Image (cartoon, rainbow, N blue to C red):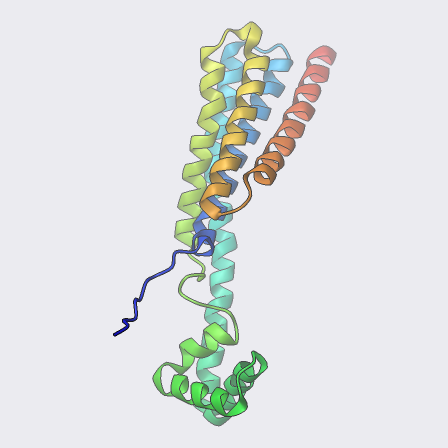
Length: 233
């Protein structure tokens, strides 16, 4: 006698909300703080000035990330709520039309029209709003906007990322600060790219190359600007 075994599959796509905010925050923290430190250091500034700039970048950047993520994701959340209210009204005012619409969606996905009608009728009888949000608009609990979660995640990961080059700048001799921060930042970015790819189930090589390339470019540009500024001043 055979038995059916039910199991819950864990897909990386379910992590996309917090993973995006975490990778963005950490990457921005590492790159922006390291770039600022290198730019100030290249201008022949003192260690105190370099560390002050780094700390200011950490605090200001973390707050900016939190505010930016909250406002951005709140806008998405507002749009989702507006769509939910619209669907609620349509289900109340025209249930037959909504049933026909849902049936058409399932038929377009390959179901036999009779089966599509049966499925739509069953879902309309159980949770019609959830069915329309998921299958018509692509809104589900897994992918719903979470402004507070996004803001906290971005701010926390930005602070952690920014602390890494700042710690290096505080520990190494001033004479080797530019080289040490540059090299360690590239290592941090490579590790971040690998960790993000592994968590999201993506290819590590491509993810590591992306973050290292853009991080190196940002550091090179700000170091050059700092050198030119220091020379002119």
